[in-house]
Length: 184
Image (cartoon, rainbow, N blue to C red):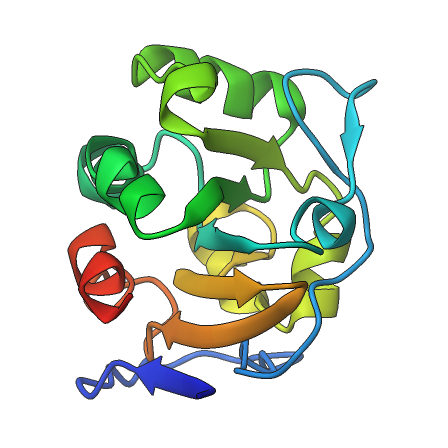
């Protein structure tokens, strides 16, 4: 069963958008654009990493931002064992930041990817997010450049099975780890 879950509490903002996100959707393939883990020299292809079995890709607007650091990413780390028990092999936290920033964020949160299977990856150019339909430029007024909208996607054999997309792009509601683990 393929499905997409979008927050039912839309927030309307004033502002000029030069492009609208296509939204991460059930049934779409994971993009092949590279992301980087720990350093710019360590390229990761999430399409290949998620090609077999079940994984989760979590989009966050920015490393070290308040909601991302206080609740969103830590929720996935905290519930990582429950996700593993439900057949999830890896959880990828994707941010439009550089690899040094996402590594420092991982370390600051006390995450051990060998134990939690939660991996922080950098989409420095935004190419992965753009291909996935999750790059929003309205973030530039807050972050200085386009960023990934907040979402979570349950991926099975390289395709999105369930998408949890925040309707206002940055709020934290449907894509919380607690909601995603309940859906499995």
